[in-house]
Length: 348
Image 1: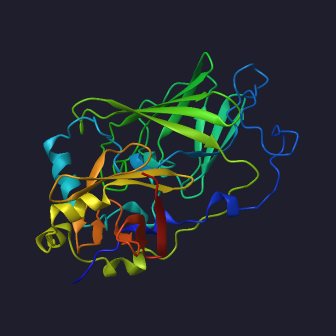
Image 2: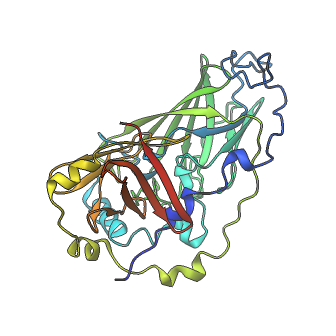
């Protein structure tokens, strides 16, 4: 049977931040007596007295990367709902990543993509490995009145106490809000609130408002962690478009061929499986199929049954295999993607 290989697979095992400029000490990083990073130290301050949010960061979990609406997001307008279902059915083969185009407002939402913030008076820069840099002007200027639509939008910021509030608009409508294809229009405005609580932790709230696409605004809240003693490296998307013709099949074909497994077998797989450092995958059963909740928000996703032990996770473009031990107990789940297998240990 023909399968579609989603671009999402390519993102799951990108070079981890710890392997980039391995063990190079971060300048100015507070340390404990044994030389380890003291991430519980107070947040640093800039010369103007505001918290300094500079550094290399990574969002916790990656659920919102696959469903930016979360569990309680708004409804889509009819045109957007139809487009989203079309993208899902095609296993995201029309994603901008396939064409090596910028990701737009979803940049950084996938937890394996670190990003760097450089804060200066009047201007804060956000750099991504897989996206153009963002300029956030904090010099008091307004947003452009009639901007030329751009991939990453136009950003201005202001301080509310110790929170940097960033407003971004002027996006084009070619990007997706997440890797499963939630759309947006050029009317999209994103408001981010960066609150650094100590040296190693920051809370990020993102509010999305797009009245041409969604019935109401919504907000997601994502913990962000400082990544010490490492650095970003260049990432180049170069050859995806050449291989795009290999991405065939549809979600509907997979559903039509779905296997039927007895409910008592499905119940054996229900539990929590851990992928460090990203968090827990929670598996539940509704009696006739398995459901998966990703770490870091993003709601619950249905798996398509392939066999008694193998399931397709269409939102991630991955296969899931449950591995019983010699006694029949299921203590491991394996996420299978094109680059290899990722084993997850069952923790409860």
